[in-house]
Amino acid sequence: MKKVLSIVTGGPVDQPRARRLSAKLRAEVTFLDIDRSEPRRASSRRVRAALASDRWDLVYLEGTGVAGGLNLIRAARGRGLAFVVSSGDPIGGFFRTTKGPLWGWAFGLYERRLYRACAGFIGWTPYLTGMALALGAPRGVTVEGGVDLDVFQPAAPAARAELRRSLGLEADHLVCGIVGSLTWSPRQNYCYGMELVETLNQSRRADLSLLIVGDGTGRERLERAVRPGLRGRVRFTGRVPREEVARVLPALDIAFNAQTLDGLGRYRLTAKLPEYLACGVPVAMSPVPGFYDYVREAGWALPARHPASPEFARETAAWLDGLDRAEVARKAERARPLAEQRFDYERLSERFAEFVHDLWDGDGS
Image (tube, rainbow, N blue to C red):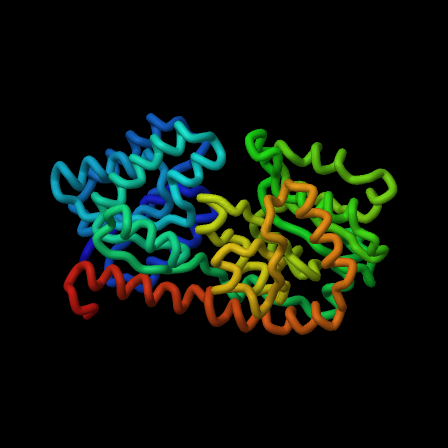
């Protein structure tokens, strides 16, 4: 039986993905999870030790952290080790947007070398797959971020009402929200959730409430940004254990998925998107390509502006002020079927396995 080493550099979000996608491989799979809090040199040593510990037929890199990527580039060049790499973000675009042009240039070089050295690329979106092929990856496939449909499910009306009560949300309010990291970006003057707070500040709708699940350096800024008279309509839960997220999501009427319209946001789908849909929650999303390909029938396009801009909040508030509850209900009915069609791990793991098997023997057998 073939032996596969799976190196996961993306943290806890990517670990379940690597295991679910690998489940149908005709191979013995060993997992190496890299802790992001671990010093990079220590992570790199662990990767090198793992690579040298056996004669691997393939290495599967989930995430593009340099502790895994640089060692794999060297191993591919030095001894012909075959590896595939999976990513949900453009590497150069991520650093260019979050850190600046110099960082973007440096990690753009790393991105190109990583993709040229790999045997194949697995993109979370077709746009990332196309970018990787253009940068030199020899083969590619799209395998989206998936969702465990047995865990993430819509709640029954009574359970949903009780959930809202426990969270301090009015039963008859239109509840918009997010689940994610509230990390403040000085360069963007923004973190997830700010677009919701500023929209609430602009809205005339008396039955609009917000649920913001997560924590980070931006949380205090978000709390301060809520107008005093509206603070009773915003619930901050703080960090929720991952195993509890599926229980909280059905409290939402609309999940927000705002993206920057740049070299990062245009190419990605957030990991939370399939989970929102699986819980029967329609999504309001920036008009990046992923909205039209994956969300449109169960969601709405947000304004084509930076989510930190005053125009974004003003236009989003005007949309929500006129939104009809019947339309929300119609979109919600389409959310779960869309998750089943596009993000079911059972289907995604089959596509992943077929791609890897073809790399091994050329005919998928």
